[in-house]
Length: 171
Image 1 (tube, helix red, strand yellow):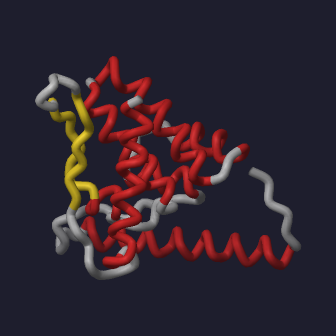
Image 2: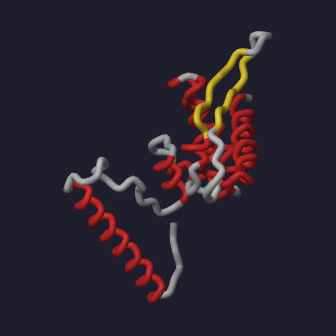
Image 3: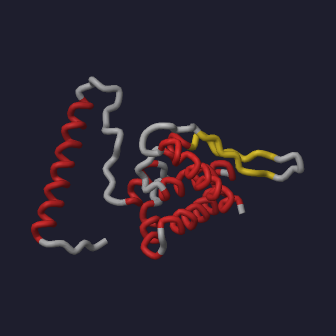
């Protein structure tokens, strides 16, 4: 990715990067002192949407493909394409239920720009159920999040988006 900016603007962004690095170094030193249950910062650094999605829900190595698809498509189309590809790739390796859950979480993370908790906290579980006529269907279990940036108004949107992704992936 190439950025065009004035020297002053480039200097500003370099300074921001350096300061962020300094903060992460400080957190790392403090955590290693043993006063916290975790030895690393919980929020990994990410330079773009693709890195945020990979860090948030994975799978490992998906960031380059998200970048590639996102260059030519809007966010919604990118989420659909990635969901279909992931489901196709993972179905034979990990099983249908795992493939469906990963595809739903990854695509939902793309749709929420990797900054909301919906893909990790909002979607509790994705599984495959058998209907009475012996056909199978996706089942998505949700945690209703009533506060914060997702709020109750966005719960419906998150539910609909994840159901839509599951339907697309199932087909």
